[in-house]
Length: 402
Image: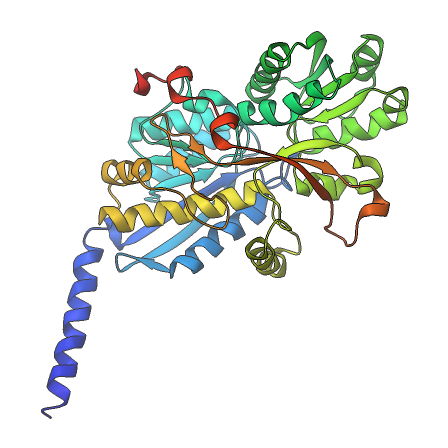
């Protein structure tokens, strides 16, 4: 009995401590919403694999934070801002979701970030690209992980101009993301001495790119910049090959293309493309080990969107742990202060406008003859240091930096 008393006392103290921690977590559960495209043109880009990446982050964190359980919920926003806003509002108002992440599609991310700011809730974007998220539409509770249009422009745009691709024609998705990507890349091309000879806009999820590609072909450009993403880029590349555009020496710049889309397109069609990503599975033993786990769960290797979602969920949980609560203000403060150090980002830092800065990489897609396995698709050409890849907060137009 004398032996049992200290043990029982210790157990009661542990239970009491966990209960005290849980009182610092609203509703005794941390609920994270993954809101993205799960059935449309960006389904492979992020989709259900991003949901799995979020679950892996919860698992790696330990399944609980401050003694409270962690729950991942998800929904398909269909690339429609009104649908996304409706889901987000329901999540916040009735389902007690604490934060929303991923948010593929810039128009969706901007709408949900605006609502999150109004509701004083944290959102962390990994799937959308526009720099407006940390610029004119920035929020004290909004964070941008994984990549943005500025980083893509510096990586892919800069490399091609420096290697003779000095006359650009843009094939641009007709919404906020496409405009931002074209604008950022155009600025960088011109700053390097190149010129933009034309552009054309196409609707999201277009199927026929023939008239757009003919305009590009007749423009005199030696680079066609694909300011689109997902199946839009893949379909445009396929049709460009049918028109023989690259046979005449014109290069195709996939300004937002990831491993998922390269896999879907195949090396025969994608070979030689240059692109920028923030992570590749075959860069290190640590990356390979994580990718093997991810593949076991999803059947595929992760791209930077999946990894960014993993990292953002993990960092959010670390911030709750540091803050000692899931209340928005202290967690946002912790997110701004904490370095980002995980399998996705090394020595990452969050700027005052919410932009997470880390190194990006320029890759070239291998020829089929160069590939040694199903997912052996990239050759790394260069590392773009984070401070070069991302815009300085003072130059972003965010009012939080004024």
